[in-house]
Image 1 (cartoon, rainbow, N blue to C red):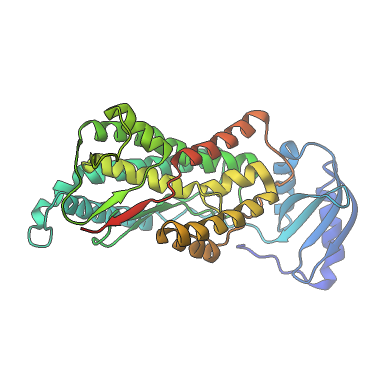
Image 2 (cartoon, rainbow, N blue to C red):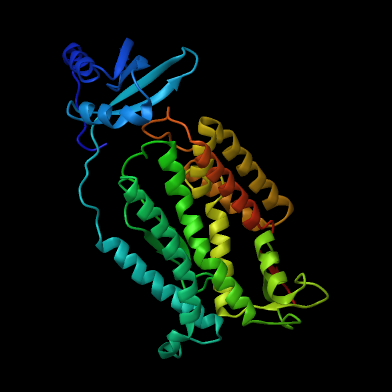
Length: 372
């Protein structure tokens, strides 16, 4: 954390007295202990609902130089407060880097879309705007997705950054790896974790589904190309959309839909949304799982990593990369500042809905290279 508090052993008695005074009327302290990092752990009982008094606790302890984390000490049947030395530096976020990355991503997605239309952009760069339908579709879905996170994050007073879009080289199928939003501190509680985490996928799907239906309705069906091609995977949602437009399951009988740029871009939007909804770490699905299950979400995350490995070995090698990335970024979701307050009934329903959306978008075989 920024503005770290340096605690000398001789200062601890004075600090615990100040902490006790700050928590007066908020927490009944039964025991406390310091560790070697200068973290003060207090156990006892909150004198009110954690959701109601947490912000007051935080405001008071930040004046002393601590950031409080609340959690339940299940074995002891007590509430536990970890006073971490340091206070988050709430400086204004940088704007130039997100803007520069977004412009670079616009360029890379335009180039990818133009190549999908058969344009050689290196010999004819003036025709890059041929990629506009694809770029507008992909970036429209991704931008709406990230703005869902950003707007709800700001409404929940979370210190979320502007989205950082990730451009990909032109020799790629997508032109982008999506985008991320950076948090400078943990979310406040599990309700915030859920609302911010699920807002992105739901907002993106509000744009992606109409674009998919429009793209499919303006695409044609017929036999696949004579040469090699890439076969996109089927999810329950994608199958239902093709059934709605064409009245049949596709591909079947040597017939499939030949996706135009809008349909292909919308399918990519569905794929990226599905990957984000994997219940692992700080992916959107990891947020949903932690909000619903708390620390037990770790078991689901490790199970999902194992499933991805199995899919990579048995179904599609594309899945192998995901467990590697998950282990690099961390499969476990960090706790929020207030990990005592749970979810209301409507929030539990929203979390379950998020897991069902993941099931509808799940593609066992996302992409297959078909050889001539």
